[in-house]
Length: 473
Image 1 (cartoon, rainbow, N blue to C red):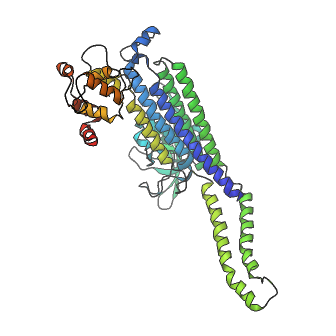
Image 2 (cartoon, helix red, strand yellow):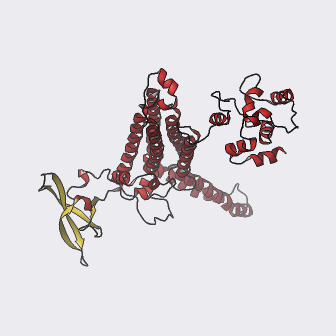
Image 3 (cartoon, rainbow, N blue to C red):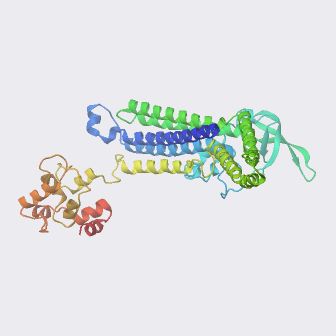
C-alpha cells in the first residue's frame, strides 16, 4: 500500500504540474494581448509623452502573433522532453518504426503538430542543437554521404581535417569517415566528407539532452519576443515582470515533472516489496488448507475445498494493486491511465486562439460591442456606449422586430447605470406613444437612416435574428 500511495502522489503531482505549465503559457499570451500598446490609446500616449510611428501597429501585431506561436512551440518542446525523448513517437502512428532522434523530432504527429508551427530555418536550427564539435570528433558515430544525391551510410569519424579556403583564407573543417561497405562489409575510409554531408548519431542520453536544450532555447525565444514587445507598451516594465514570473513558474513546473520521470522507485525497494508480496500471497493457500479444529476429516475436507476462493481473490487484489502502482508511477507515457498531454496542448492552442479573436489589436478586423454602437450612431461624435444586455429576450425581440432602434438605447437607460431592464423599456415605449405589442418603429430612427434591427442582428450574430425571433415567439 505504501508503494501505491507513493505512486498516486506522483500521479496527482504530475497532473497539477502539467496544469501549471498550460496555465502559465496561456497567461503569457493573455498578457501579450491585454497590456495596452501605445498606438491603441493616442490620448493616453499624448499625456504620457509616448511617441509612435506608422509602423507600430503592424510591429505590435507581428510580435503578439509570434509570441502566441512560440508559446505553442514551447509546450510541444516540453511535451517531447517528458515523453517522446524517452519512449518515442505515438504508437500505431504513420511514422511506423521511425525513432525519435535529433533529426526526426519534428515529425511528431501529436496535435498540435510542431511541424505546422515551425519555419524550415527554425527546424534546421533546432535540429543542430548539440551537433557541436564534441559530437564531431574522432570515434563519433555519424551518418554521412559522399555525394550531393547519394544515400546516407553509417560510419565513425576517423580524422578531423582543419583547412583554409584558397579564396579569403577562411577556416573550415572536413572529415575522414570510416565505414563498412560492400557484401563482405569491408572497412573503407572516405576522405574529405564536407560538414554539410555528415550528421552525428546521438545516444539516448544525448537525445534527452538535446530535448532539454530545445526547451531552454524555446523559453529564451519567448522571453526575447516579450522584451521586444515591451518597448511598444505603456506599462512595459510591468509586462516584463509578469512574463518573467510566468516563465519562472513554468520552468519550475517542468523541472518538477522531469524529477518525477527521472526518479523512479529504487530498485532494491521495489524488489523487496515484490518478494514479500510473493511470499505472502502464495503462502496464504496453505493457511486455508489447515483444519479449523481437531474434528474429523469431513470438516477438514470442506475447508480444503473452499480454500481456493480467498486465495484467488488475494492474488488478483494484491497483484492488481501493485500493477496499478507500476502504471501510475510515471504518468507521462501513452497508457490510457496516463495524463493526456495532447489534450493539454490542444487546450493551450484553443485558448490562445480565443484570446486572439476576442482582443482588439488596434486594427479594425473585428467588431466589438462598443465599436458596433459607434457604427450604428447617427454620425455625431457622441457614440452610444451603453451596455447591451445580451440575455434580455425582450430587448432582442424589440430590436429585431423593428420596435426599437439601437440609437434609442441611451434614452431608455433612465437611471444611467449602464443596464437596461424591463421596466425602463416599458416606460420608454409608453412615453413615446408605443406599447410593447404595438410593433411601431420610432420615426426619429427611420428619418436618421439607422440600420434596421434585422441588419443589426445579422451583423452582430451572423444572421441569427431569425433564431432569436423563433425563440421569443
